Every structure is written in C-alpha cells, then in structure tokens.
Image (cartoon, rainbow, N blue to C red; front, side, top):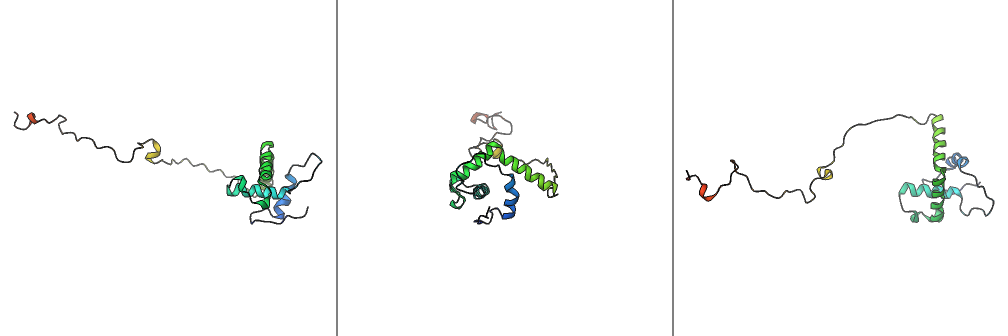
Length: 147
C-alpha cells in the first residue's frame, strides 16, 4: 500500500505502521472498497485519545468522525485493541525494551478537612456565649455582696 501523507506530527510513521499493520484484523467480506484508509482512521483515533476532545471534533483529514468512532468502538467491542496491545507488548518485552518493575507505595495522603465531612457553611463557627469559671450563671441577686 502506498504511504499516506502524515498530516500531524503525532501520526504513525511508516515504520510504526509496518509494525502495526500485520496485527490488524483482515476483512472477511468482499464488497465495496473502503472510502478511508485504516491508517488515517487509526491516526484519527489516536488524535482523539491523545487530546481528549469530543469525537465530533476529530479533524476532517482523518475522515468523518462517525467512521473514526465506528472503527474505534467496533474494535473495542470485539477485543481487537486488547489483542494488538498484548502483541506489541510481547514484541517489546522480547526485545528487552520493557522493564517490569513494580513499585508499591503505602503512604497516606490526608485530605483537607473540608473534604472529610467538615461543616459546609464556611470556616467560621457561630460564636457561643462564654462560660464562667465556676460554670454557674451569674444573676443580679447572686453578686459578690450576697453572702
């Protein structure tokens, strides 16, 4: 297949496409040829996943957003993405490009008091009346002169 012009700086290179293409599912049904090459649609999927933009915002150079989303969703449902990632990881592991180190961190990150169920009405508490030292009410008749 002739190379597709790379439209964005993050699109698949010819070398990357040569590694990925054998992992793609083959068409089972004869019929109408594809309107958009898979490489462009996959670049559109990669663009959308990388940017986090809505599917409708996929640039027109990658094909209609419905086609890009349709391919993504079809391969997600039938497990094609999972098989491709597993195969690529196996190749990279065999070539010694992956270090399978596991790091476990058991530190505790405390949340701010407002995230832990504190009052929601603000930071100030309503003022309370001051309590006397002897914890009894001072009335007018119980002053110092009252025996």
